[in-house]
Length: 266
Ligand SMILES: NC(=O)c1ccc[n+]([C@@H]2O[C@H](COP(=O)([O-])OP(=O)(O)OC[C@H]3O[C@@H](n4cnc5c(N)ncnc54)[C@H](OP(=O)(O)O)[C@@H]3O)[C@@H](O)[C@H]2O)c1
Image (cartoon, rainbow, N blue to C red; front, side, top):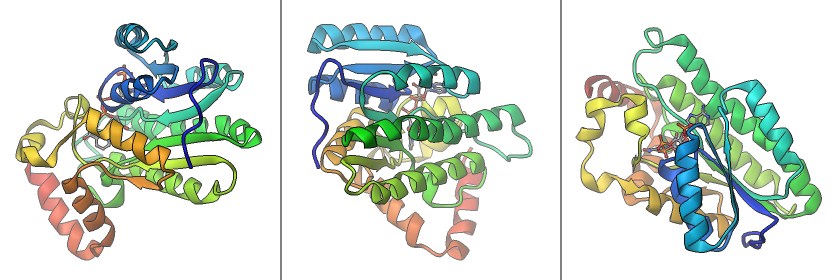
């Protein structure tokens, strides 16, 4: 399976494109000649990225500022996207919170589920039928290695990424033979604004340098995997170990270890 061809009319949609992995995905696609629709809330960041990609790679880039956690805004956005040609969709916007769920702000926890789960699902059910009818397209869903394992003090996030991981891998199998592919990007630690948004504090400092990959490395791995029609992409050696460990280690062993790790580090 190869990626749908890059044409000026047919766009790559990237959510969470104003920073981190999403911005790097924008750069990676533009470098290969793809025209883009960049989505996030911070319009100034999106506009700055769009200007740079247009002048450097001579591609068309549209910017849409949208709060994807807001159901009405999401519906309006999807109505706009449904009447456009979208060949590749990268569902990447997301954030985490850290702390005991009962002590965290309930509204922020709900916002996390709305963005990491409901918005991803809305995009899939809204945009996939047209891709299947056309017989071509590709979907990239950014889950996480955190979605493979129980993560105390990171419960809403881990559960939301379990949804993303399972949705992506289910679709990968379900879509076989339709001309449309679905690939999971399940990163471990990536240097972005993610830790700052989640208020992870010292947790990140406990991770050695070699555990990290850059947003650019994650994005390039994602594009190579997407082009190859892969089911799951885990960028970086340490993340691959975490990925396998999180999936195969019995919960009775893993849970107490992770309780210590996530509980003591901040
Ligand atoms: N970094 C890691 O270690 C890591 C590991 C595994 C998985 N991931 C996943 O990778 C994805 C990208 O994260 P990142 O690491 O690149 O973090 P990031 O730099 O914080 O980027 C998050 C992106 O999501 C957007 N976003 C947040 N809330 C939004 C909302 N309500 N509506 C629309 N857009 C929203 C942000 O844009 P605005 O603030 O401008 O809206 C930003 O563009 C996330 O799904 C994350 O869970 C990250």
